[in-house]
Amino acid sequence: MTLFEYMSVAISLVVALTFAEGLRGLQCAMHPGQRYVIHVAWLFIKLSNPIIIWWSLWGYREDPEYWNFVTYSMALIVPSIVYLQMLSLVSHAPHKVPDWRKHFYDQRRWFFGLNVILGALVAFMWSNTLLDAPPQLFPILGYSLLTALSIAGFVSANPKLHAVIVAVTGTFTIFFYGVLTFEPISF
Image (cartoon, rainbow, N blue to C red; front, side, top):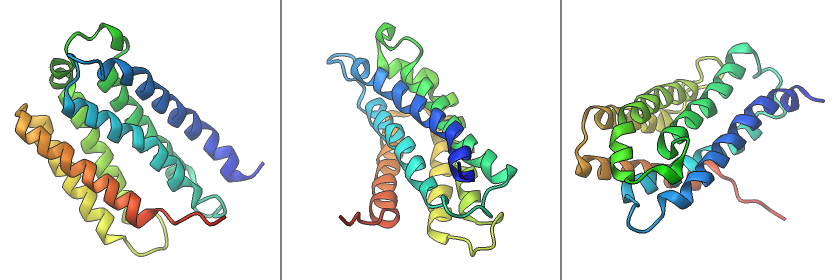
C-alpha cells in the first residue's frame, strides 16, 4: 500500500458520506411545493464539492513529499467542512422538513460560517505556503471573493443577495473546475 492509498482512506470515507447525505436529501428538497431554488442550487454545488475534492487529490498520488501531518489534516478538514455544510442543507430528517426556504435561512449562519472557513482554508492551500511552489493567484482571488460573499450570506437574510451569492458561486465552480482544473481524459 502506498502512502497516498493509506492517506486517502479517511478522506474517501468523508467524501462518500458527504455525497450520500446530499443524495439522501435531494429528493425531499426537490419535492414540488416545498423546494426553494436557492437551497437546491446550493445542494448541487455542495454535491459537486466531494467530486472536486476527490479529483483534486489524485494529483498528489505520486508525490510523497507533499504528505505530512499538516497537509493530510488540511486534506481531511476540507471534506469534513463540506460534510457539515451538507448536513445543514439536508438536515438529519429531510422528509420532515416542511419548508426548505425557512430551513435554509434558519441554517444560513451555520452554513455560511463554515463556508467562510472553507474559503479561507482553500485560498491558503492555493497559496502553496506549505509547499515549495509559487502561489496560484486566480484560485486565491476566487476563493477570497467567495469568502467575502459567504460573510455577506452569514450576515444577511436577503433573498436577492442570496440569489447573487449562489449564482456567483455556481459560476465560479463551473468555470474554475470545469475549464481550468480538469484535463480531458484520453482513451
